[in-house]
Image 1 (cartoon, rainbow, N blue to C red):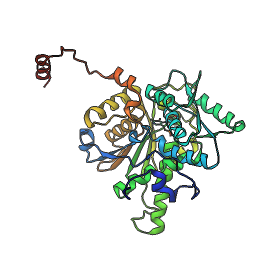
Image 2: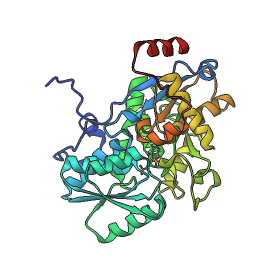
Image 3: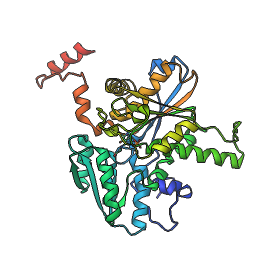
Image 4: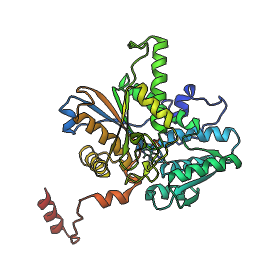
Amino acid sequence: MDKEHYTGLIDRYRSILPLAEDSQAISLCEGNTPLVLCRNLEQVNRKGIKLYLKYEGLNPTGSFKDRGMTVAVTQAVYEGSRAILCASTGNTSASAAAYAARAGIRAFVLIPEGNIAMGKLAQAMMHGAIILQIRGNFDDGMRLVKEVAEKAPVNIVNSINPYRLQGQKTAAYEIVEALGCAPDFHCIPVGNAGNISAYWMGYSELAEDVHNQGTRAVTASGLAARPRMLGYQAAGAAPFISGKPVEKPETVATAIRIGHPQSWDLAQAAVKESSGWFNAFSDEEILATQKLLTANEGIFCEPASATSVTGALHDIEHGKISEGSTVVCTLTGHGLKDPDIAIRQSSTELINIDAELDSVKRAILENL
Ligand code: F0G
């Protein structure tokens, strides 16, 4: 096989991952996702800002979770585990189910009844996970998973599993490799708060590394530059804005419908150390951004993912993100994950015509 053939992020980044040398990677060739420069957003171009989208929806199961799952499942199998367990708003369950299938082990997933996007449910079902639909929300599921794992011989693969964050930090490495340096700002949706913590870990390791090697510009603090981390939430599920857990989180962005984030301290530290901030946006704003990206840039992400760009555009407009900056927004999941929301909010009409040439011609001419 071609030596350059990409075989997944463990092969690519094993030296910075805490895995035993003889552990067999359980991989679906995740990672190595595109960093797409926005071209058509006038409100960004006008300010001389370069806005990049880290399109994590192009991972094998359609979300960034695969980065963490390949490492967590590799480690679980190495330890001899026969089963993995998670609570999920959907994407973690899809990813856990796929990697468990790949590894030949069992996945148990707890999902909130009625609040999981259809694409994600289809994935968990097709990959053969044992699906426990709970009459409760993600936070209830998380509490139960932690209680069960104390007594049952299963590995939790939620982001409280440190191997998950280790895998997810590789996205920061890819961005720095692609840009040649860290961006000025990194915008990211925040739910359970694992991903913002993982990116910060990645950027921080790189900054240390550069410092140690003395190869790049070093800031006054003695570290190479790291981005300011901007964590964005849905207004109905925004514990980092209220400063305390939210008991009944509600948002159309079901992926981040979370009131008790598990990585609270790590996320707070990431934002504080980077001189970043949190902000929150309404469902209407989030859906409008999802549509904006789809119609203007050709990029389809799920609602939760659009939260990062909603925040970036807002903070650019209000001058909080300075002119001429380089900004990266993580698009955490693919738009096809949640077709129901997409179709419900799209104003595109289906034009019904007869199956004949004249009708097609007329329809084209009328809509040119
Ligand atoms: N975006 C998407 C598409 C997600 O699925 C999630 C989390 C997030 C953002 C937030 O990331 O939790 O690290 O702050 N989804 C989890 C799940 C909770 O179960 O799939 P976070």
